[in-house]
Length: 222
Image (cartoon, rainbow, N blue to C red; front, side):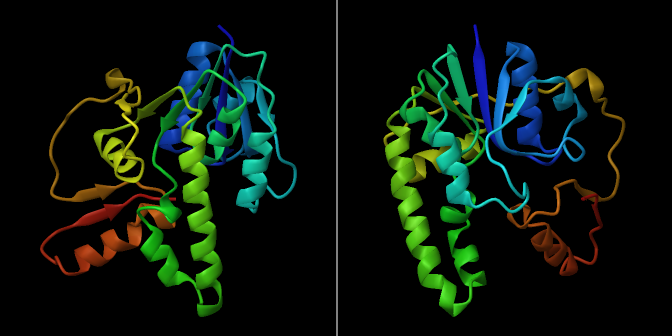
């Protein structure tokens, strides 16, 4: 079976990137992405067939440009397409069968919408609201072309059903090599390993522990 995997950007060593890597290794799949930096993501991608579909500054790509690139993909030579982000759903309109392995609906236009809007200047609030409204409608239409939806957790499944009540995603947890991990002991601190990205809310963890002086937290982020 010939499989194509669509991933918005391979720029970090994150959970989503690892899932895409494991899927690609399992299926011997080709990967289509809008941005790829082999030095900052998992080195195993260097041995794979990664196709970059957008040219330009890989860390400053316009969201609409990314969507347009996915919408123009012709994947008719593949038996299955797996998309990982809402922008990848643009390809579902003419490339089937299509599975959406969802890590989260677009955060900044859905569950983090209020926080993102609050950060915008007065001049940018209305344009931001209009863009989010358009993208919500666009994603709702794109989902109609998706053949199956899998959420990576119960939490993501609940989010999907909150924003798209007509969908019934299955929960398929990311694969974990449990043999690599051994329980040794419990220490007297909390540990955060989330990367320093606004959507990970590491700043909120820091603020929470400021009002809990009796508790200790270690932030191991990059």
